[in-house]
Image: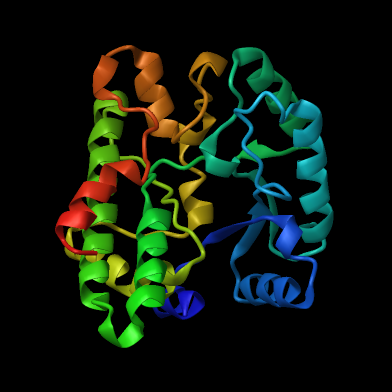
Length: 259
């Protein structure tokens, strides 16, 4: 369904894949489907570790990078971008530098996000509700409306923040997960973006924006690119929440709505 939504809009995405679940028959089918439909295939580590943990050092990072690279590098739409799991790049500047050197030595670039959100949390709540009461008694429309509103709120927030920092509109990259909410609601989200005047472009074109050449100082690495830039600017202080996005921020509203 996700591919159908993208095809209907003639949009090409970048699928950042974890290698651990792409070696079996199902995983290979997904890779082939994404690749053969013209979408770029990039690296999201092998087992999705949390690189802000002291236990997960730069040696593990290199192993994770190379394991998944070996799985995807034979695909025709393979691209050397790496998306950090949880958008966490290391808990200190030394580790960030070490990991960045590994990326550079392997001709990889950071597949930065500029618009982050908690679609994964909405998806988690939707699946839990379906398991509890069944699909027939689940208010799918309510979850859809919340999902679209939430993503648009975060998109408009990062657009405003980006304009303050850069003095212009940039080509954004939006983080969405390969999950049930994307399968069910991506078409509604796309329509809402267009309704609000956003122009949707292919991910590869978005990454050609010069904003992605602005690499944050290692002291401010992690989260979305716009968040890192805002933190590095020193202009926003405590108004920048941490983590930038998390289910805890949406929990109360979803509870109030009975979702």
